[in-house]
Length: 226
Image (cartoon, rainbow, N blue to C red):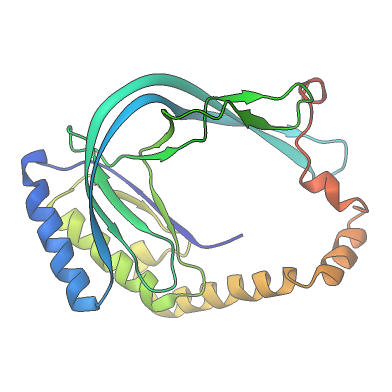
């Protein structure tokens, strides 16, 4: 439950990555946004998302979403920037040698399903990563940062990444409607504030027939998904 901008694409010319880094650094300096140059050498086994499947639950309106991943070996360098707009998550602009937006999240080890079937555990060893070619940045409640992030992404699309695709749940990327953007941020923040009241959440769930809140967070066993 949040407002998240996702983006994906690749550089028109990977040889111009240094120009992109310098241009973004200049804009961050002008906006007084912290930013950090990134140069990583990723070596190991990476897991990447294939898709998901929704399975209806026993209760009306309650379902389970299962995510599916595959893995492959990786040995590549990433270069780019991490940008830190006020009040938001990190805006990650890192690229692989082919110029594609790419980032890797280090995992605490090789993931595997537990015998109980209630989730995932790890082997506690280095060299395992979760790959993501569609980074995201959460902007909930930060209208100004949202506007400026969209402006920065539009700049990148115009000058370096003509195929950049941006998914903005507020519609601001497409419409530039600041009124609708502000209203959506206010609505989402109000929902977050509402659900921080635990007693009120229990009452709302009971109204729709859910009395066991733990059922909303428990991951079903494999035999329950069939």
